[in-house]
Amino acid sequence: MATGLESNMTWLNKKLKADQNFDVVYRVIHVGGKNACIYFIDGFCKDELMQKLLQQFMGITAEDMPKDAHEMSKSFVPYVEVDLKDSWEEILYSLMSGVFALFVDGFDKCILIDSRTYPSRGVEEPEKDKVLRGSKDGFVETIVFNTALIRRRIRSTELVMEMMHAGKSSKTDIVLCYMDNRVDHAFLEKIRDRIKHIQVDALTMNQESLAECLYDRKWYNPFPKFKFTERPDTASAQVLEGNIIILVDNSPSVLIMPTSIFDVVEEADDYYFPPITGTYLRLSRFIIAVLTYLMTPTFLLLMKNPYLIPRGFEFIMVRDTVNIPLIWQFLILELAIDGLRLAAVNTPNMLSTPLSVMAALVLGEFSVNSGWFNSEVMLYMAFVAIANYTQSSYELGYALKFMRILNLILTAVFGIWGYVGGIILCILFMFTNRTVSNQSYVYPLFPFNAKQLAKRLFRLRLPGALDPVRKEKK
Image (cartoon, rainbow, N blue to C red; front, side):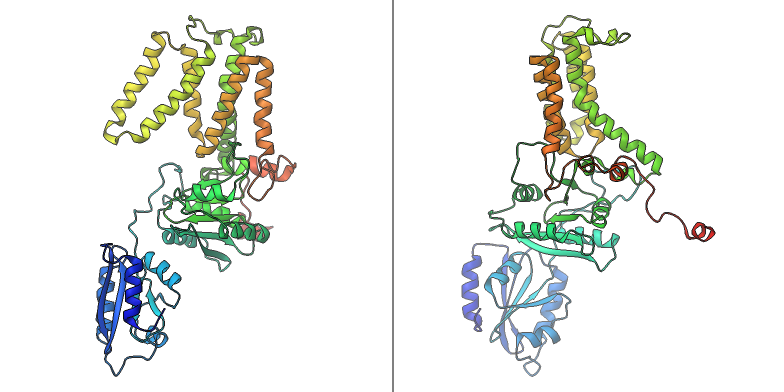
């Protein structure tokens, strides 16, 4: 930038299109006998603070006026976050991010005052990641608030919040959060390098756009490569375990890396209850996840091969007339359930209850009475639809759904060999999947580690849980 105010204003007004953008505000003032100009984005700056700063600047006399921007920022700017920049690229980035900019005639640097405030909602509990017991706060769309929620839980000097940017047009703020003494530094450097070399115009879908840039191989494998969470307590626990948390501005969820299948299934409720209860909840979630995958393909296999039905379970046979082949009933209901889910997302709250009752009646009793579906098929698909919500990961739910549909089709075409082949394909998809750090997706199952596997399957007593009184007695 130049030292002359007029040349700086001419260049900046043209660059910012100040005459066209109503929210780009600039005003010429007098500071200590010199002309000065302030620039800011309307809606990002605090009005009360702006008024106090203007009073301070206009109150500077010619005798007290400092000689350069450095002296002025140190002695005459009554604010905490103040910076000096002489690069137009850095000045424009700060200004478009909401930072207050002051240009003074004769100064070779711009004074940047970070007095911005972003519109935001409260840190209430997320709708998806709810817990029966524990903290009820959640991440929001403002990245500074999110980092503060983690800092509140980890008061350690080893906690690092590293700011980065991505997107040619959006210049989206990205924060790498990790414990410096616990993180894998080779993996950290790998992630840092990937973010630096992201060649995209904008992260339009926030963390999902970033995730696709960080992991671009094996896109056809539906099992999730990342774990997303909107809970600060979950994110903090992962940081303390040595993982990396990535926060993206404008997103209320964070990415956890690296992530295995066991990490995805874990939930905060496992640790907010005693070990035996937490173990029961975790194992229940594992078993139900397996049942959601096997329930309908197994039923279809038994209906095609009645001799495989164990003695005493003959009642599971379809008694009514089958007007539509069972495979088509299952596939239609798989699509219908997703249709209802999408409809529920876009339904106004005041209409959600009556429309839910109507959908239950139409798709339940009426569809069976009309002959489109058999009651047994409706029962098993209802279990699958409800059981999908026992774990919080949407990505894992849809991965199991895709594997289940594949198994249904293979079972309908090839019978028992198709059923076995579908299970083998599902296992192969899991075992050949890799984490972002290129580690095994099913560790500690493969490579096998009995101690770590027990820790993953069972909610063990937390380290250091023994109180000092009992230690002294020992």
